Image 1: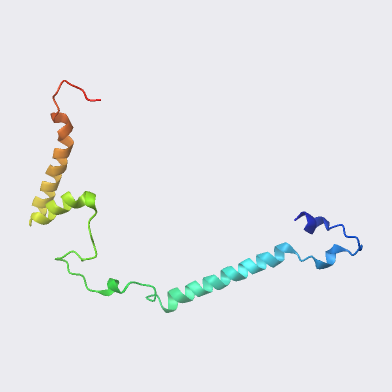
Image 2: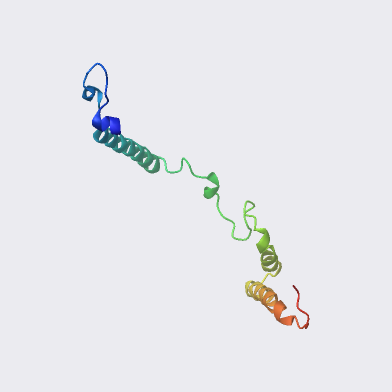
Length: 118
């Protein structure tokens, strides 16, 4: 921007101001126009065809008795998922899950050895 503000030293003596364009109004107008066009495009997409970019699986009716096939539990929740699925009673499954987590919390308290590991 130094040459834009001060001009250059040329041997012909032609003033270098004739080729300059004002930076601020040009780029500000260009940025505002681009933002407005992008906003109009996004608003027209959202308002006129909102389902164009959606997933068609969102419109299939849900079966409350079965987990959808595309939902896979994470590996670290597999024990909880197996406990909850194996007990048909909801309260019994939740109590069994709480008991299994309680066992995991109680394991360090069962260590009664006098030897200490590294």
